[in-house]
Amino acid sequence: MKSNNVKLLQQLAKFTADLEFPWSDSDYPIYPFLWEREVSGEFTIENLFRSVTPQFEPYEEGGKILKTANLEDYLKQVWQKTPKHQKAIELLKNNTLSLEVAEIRSLDNPPDTFKILLGQTKSGEWIGIAPQIPADFEEYTPTGDMIIGEPLLPIYLPQTATNFELLNKLEPLLADLDFCEINLLGGFTDTGFILRFGETRESMFNNLLDAIGFARTFPFQKLTPDTDSEDDFEEEYMEATQGIDDLLQSNLTNLHTYLFGIGCCYNIYFIGQTPDGDVAGVVSMAVWS
Image (cartoon, rainbow, N blue to C red; front, side):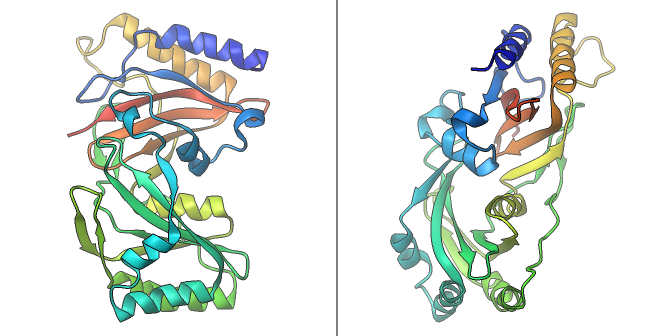
């Protein structure tokens, strides 16, 4: 581990010791976080989901947040139901170089999972499809208010005529298709798939998961609670969270707050980029019922 990263983690560990996330229905610790590029590769939300197991018992029992699933099984289970399902998947197959399916788990109940379909089009852009799962689009605020928001990222429109035509054919077709995520919420059935394109795999993935409310990227939100009442938090707690905010803002650039999850349990990352291009900060969990 790089010496400057060791120093930053030691400073963060000093402030996070015995510290819990300020706004949550249940108490969860705050942990230092480090992603070294030379060890883990480029930091992306997808790579994070594929690499990291949540550190919060019992939520770590489910393992990684995202895993590769069997494509053929998924196509048979989901995309052979009706002629409209078959038409949609044939359109997708005919316009992509390859397809893959990923399984994403919720945080509050490890067996709860849903699947997304993604691939690279023949013109080089990326395409992704996900079921419109139930999401509240909640937003964290330093005041503790839970705001119901909406997707944050702008929709990317295909830059080639072929993909633009594919969008116009697929989007209305997908909107009317029924789906059943048998491993989500005891078997969640609804109508409508979300379709997103991206110039790169990363931008498509981020946009798709933002659209369904599972992975949301915010400008940096300070960890220190914003409260007028001296009775809400002890002075030592306020000093510790302020110390974390100061450390992050003085040592990191491109700071963001990330909110991952659906239902009532969310991972919250307060992270930014080190001078060497690594990613560091703190992570916690919140339960909002």
